[in-house]
Length: 192
Length: 198
Length: 187
Image (tube, rainbow over all chains, first blue to last red; front, side):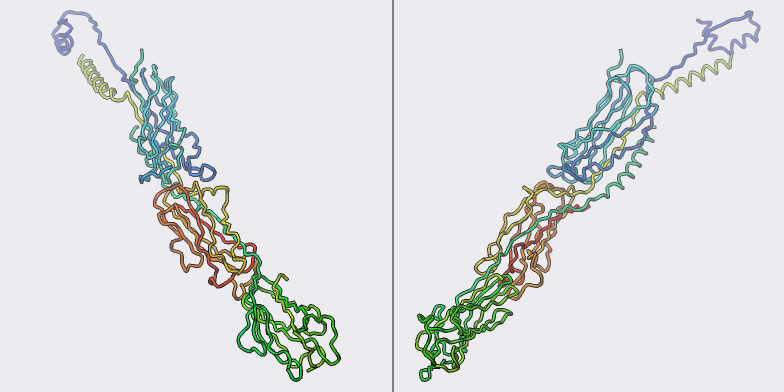
């Protein structure tokens, strides 16, 4: 040990000793070389970067003024990955709420709820449905999908579906805005 | 990577939103109809004797017009007489007015068909001058033959006001010759005024 | 030997720094991602029960005199299910009740039309009101500052012969006027 330490601390010393004329032919020692790769998740840039579902109310017919059928809108997050096991997708959805903040009249609503689903990741998919009230209260809902016990690299798809109005009420006029936040990270449950 | 995504998303969303909010729809209209009807009606009141220009007529007793003295007591020739009688009336549609003389002149009651002695007259002619709205007509009740006669006048528009009838008996008028003496008796005629559909 | 020590020291230092940065990115987050939509300003008229949109007054005149009856009336009508999803105005207009078959001007002493007042209430605090012989009808349009859905009651009243009560109505089986209620969104 003492000789080993002497070797590290005094590499230059050995060189000096060699110059002084010590009597050994050869020697060999090992130097461990190590590195590590940290746990990492990456989400791709959303494409498209935002979604406008357009006009949301029926303009004629028996249900005029109520929500119309809005088709599914998809957003791709390409080349998303986690390089470790025990991850989950968490989605926080916030309902579309009208910019008009004036008091909501009876039989009207200023919110549109929708469902956000992110696939494919774990067997149990991540999906959350907002449940804002007609007055736009409690717009945000959060949910996580199941745990994935393998690293994975894939294009993730965020699907926006199931657009509904609270109590299927008449919708107040104007622009509406909602949001979706997606998190990819360690799962609380973990893997065996 | 995270920061880029949020910034781009916000910028694009605002651009799309501003354009779409300008839409408005056409006004909503609720139409209603109000309806009613005015049926055809005619109404005639009882006659009123007009004041003024009353010659040899005494009174309007109910609907009976009384002549003062029909014949000159010396010659027994007919005396002149004139009176105007009015009836308040209305017809709210184009119609006709009919003047009907029961006897075609003043004749004695109860002597229908009997021939007077030679030289005597037994009927008195007269004229009924009608004015009703824009319409005028002269009904000459000739007393030539004792029968019912009519004068029918078309009234081409709704009319309201007074039906005015001026009755005139010329001096000496008779159904024989001028100034023939009249046989004694009570001479009458009934003049009916009717407003009715054409 | 000197070169080996320097290389090992540098490698150790490099590994130490890299380890500190990787520990913060086992979680990735995207958002808030914007989702937008819009609802256009919109009004829709509702329905009248039995689809009965006719105020039938019946016989307009006293058949003994030809003058207009003094007590003409018809029950009001209720429109249900109208709405505007933003501020709005309600307007009402009416045309005189006019003899449809009678051609030309009415003769002296007669008229061929009847004036009246039409109102629409329930949408605004003050009812919208229109009188057919008024010089102006400032109350014909009323404003509502909020979105609304509710019943509208439409009524007609105050009938009088055009030209005055001394005029009789010409005969006609079909006197007709129109009342129109309009809802318009204010964008």
